[in-house]
Length: 280
Image 1: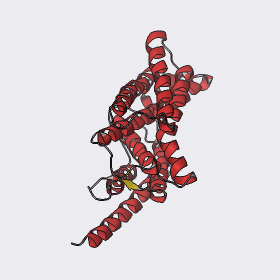
Image 2: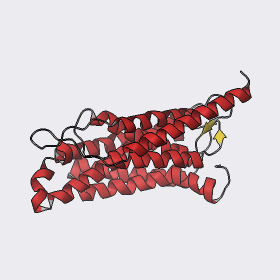
Image 3: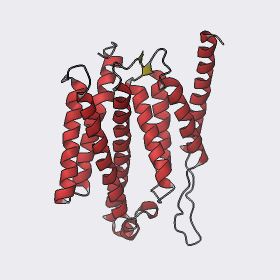
Image 4: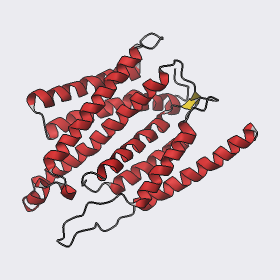
């Protein structure tokens, strides 16, 4: 098979996977009536098959689009990285929902998946080779930290919603047991467990960046990454030493996540879309 034929076949596979992923996510975004047991309590929901299909085909799209096959390089633009981050968040939810009853977030995840796939298809970015042997590991750790903090933000939003319901007199008993059957304190522990693991991975990412042969540069990505690391460090310390919880803690989480998003995705968006020039 010639290179042109291989490229054409790969393109058709990518188009089919993209179409199937969008269709799966679209079907998963349709509202359905939640299942209940004979006593009227919500059952532990299984991952609906359309969301599972969309998620699996989303991975195929990522492999075909981002994967480095030793030819043109790897697409590391803002949209593919954001798409990979969303896929990781859905993956965390997929595994976690099999173990504990989680609040219903199927529609939100499906819409996020659709948006990420479309965004990556619209702004694929240029393919570039890693400049150092540590580049792939640095990239994997960085995206892993994005996924972990993305999962933490998702749990933080669920935690804030459950606490708001707790303040409503008619819904206090339901909120104490957690939406969907997960206890509120357990949801809080899960949220900050993701924060702690994400902080460790982010620390490893920054340390690995200092080992690169090229000199350390205080560019936008570095500044936002260090600021985000500082906020997460303060959050972890405040949680451990002073028992931060509730909205006072999740605000720190959201602020750190925004800074981390600006570090790579935001900076790349400015270069690729607004300035229309390659990342330096």
